[in-house]
Length: 437
Image (tube, rainbow, N blue to C red):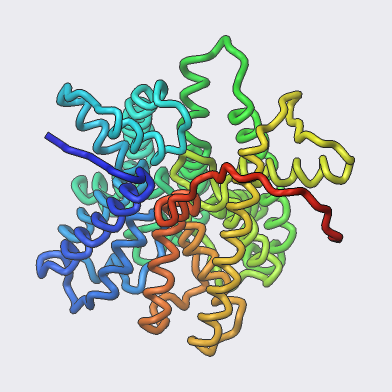
């Protein structure tokens, strides 16, 4: 029977669980049966943190250096990290008809960014079942493609399962020797992978609403989430096409250029997979990628970043200030001030983490700022795209990025609330205006 308890902070318990499983899988990767070449503790830890945070950055070539057993460990861990540790543990409790205690429900709700305990059990069941269905469909879709390449059924099945899971969980790992570039002209493969990535970052509560509340009005979260996703996806697609059509996309036909530009827009939302060499992109494309990675996916999804709803609330707040409005109103609904404050807090903490990390690693690595900043944003947002410098980083930088990946997966709110455990003060001070702007 699984026992989950916490005394002071569920956030601290969640942090401890993610750190614990990161260390456990580090030991798994260090087993002689898991790798073909010598593997250092720091590289194993980096791989484990990347998999647990479903980032995709790696200091080793997982295709060549991991054995089949090592790749199985990697597959299990990205599945674990993708849908959440508490969702996995909660599903086991439900499967074995074990009563879920109030502390356990609380942990699950915090892990999935839910405010109500009433919805957590249905959400956990939906997450596990929906994930299984989508990944199985992805496996069936990819199997003919991989089988036509190898004519080896067991190999094709494993590759299909791994690619489907990696795409849906936005893990960013691939077992293809040269990445996805080999399939860049295969529109079915590119678009199929794009769909899985998008489904993985839209957010489980949104799908739950559509499946079980068809005739009811959709929540503000769902409306805001879908609209923001749609705008960013289309905007990224159009911008990437026109920025790269004479650069990275010039080797493709017009139709292939469109599919690869769309894929780049989709994967920038924390997918981490790429059909193009990121290092060959225009500087303007890299900065756009960093912006989209920073925004990331939805709350309670496989994606990272500050989240789409956070970004939308911040933009709406700026607009309301510009208009001189007291309240932030979206789709004729007033946004709670507490949610606005949290959005501002998340944005500031993420930006500070990015800025300070860039400053420190630029000094340590003695490399140009652009690839360092891109690597940091990729780690913090748990995206996994890289310009190709990951393996060449110093041990200090690897440890720093490792911590950023874990923070990005846990979330800055969980991190701060878990470590500081803030409490609202009952003291009210005299108000005074301050000159700003």
